[in-house]
Amino acid sequence: MRATKSSKKWSLNQQCLFLNRLSELLAEGFSISEAISFLKIMMVKHESQLDQVVKRMASGESFPSSLSSLGYSADIITQLHFSIRNGQLIETLSFCASQMKRKQSQSQQAKKVIAYPSFLILLATLMMIAIRHYLLPTLESSVTNDNKWGIIMIIFLEKLPYMMCSLVFIVLLVASIFNRYLNKKSAYDHACFLIRIPIFGKWYSDYYTFYFSRELGYALLNGQSIYQFLEMVSSESTNQLLRELADLFSADLFAGYDLPTIMAKFPIFRKELTWIIYHGQLTSQLGKKLKLFSQECYQQLMTDIERKINYLQPVLFLLIGLMIVLIYGILMYPMLSMMKGMY
Image (cartoon, rainbow, N blue to C red; front, side, top):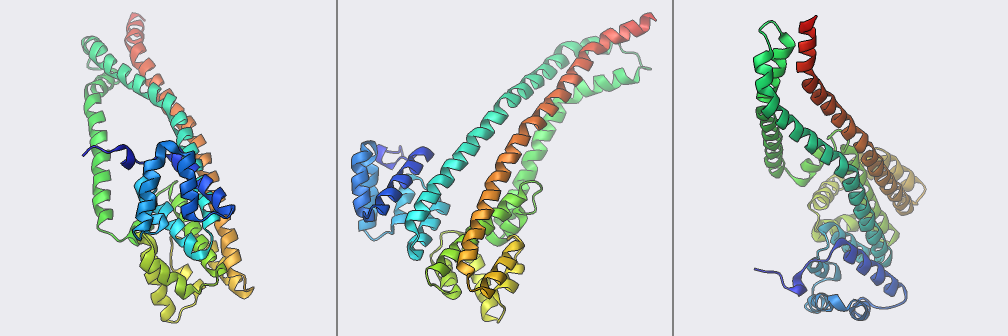
């Protein structure tokens, strides 16, 4: 079924703009319904889509849930849902907008970093294929049986297409096996696997720590107990991982364990979180400490992502350099062999 104009998902830019404008209007004293009605005037092209949001809210859906028709991710919807319960909607709207904008900026940066090296790698690959097609017959006729390097080069060129196809097949096979394996696991087991991935695993740990500590911090600052927060997450969260964590935490709390001890059992969180909770409980500032720590985790996560994106281009250029040296060696080999024969 073809999507109508009113059912099309918004672009990331449109989603960011809407959340920013909505947070500004709510800060000025508008209710959510009043703010959306006002935004329909400012965003005329999206009036029908905003009408759908209003209709879904009128039918009993929550404001965050109604945003799914505009293309907002489950992660954003969950954050907004908790923020309404914790009285932090305006702040969370603004944060989600900046979070999405920064992710978009990082995505664009990664594309720019990868684009030119990827083109060069493709060009070098095509050159290798052309060399195999045109140079291989010449090498086969000129190389003698006692020329080990020549024989190795001929074998390499002959097997090159098969090696490339095999590499692609192995990568796809491994990815498929891991995907089937992870689909059979719980969301928590899935998260435990992701944090063990070299180079990128730290991103998941930082994000899980940021997400959980921020929502728990907001709940405590809003006067909720830890038990109330876990019950809310278990029953209302759209995030499967958060629901599983809430159930595991609740079971341990009812078993008599204190929060720092429980937190230390979960490897998906940064180790510092245990000490933040312990210190926050000692000073009766747990909510505030968690909020500040979540901000630090998020900033470190974004900085690390941007730093590793910048490392990507030199690695790709190194790969290109090796391919060019290999191509140059293959092209020069017949001439060098002839010169060697002359002497």
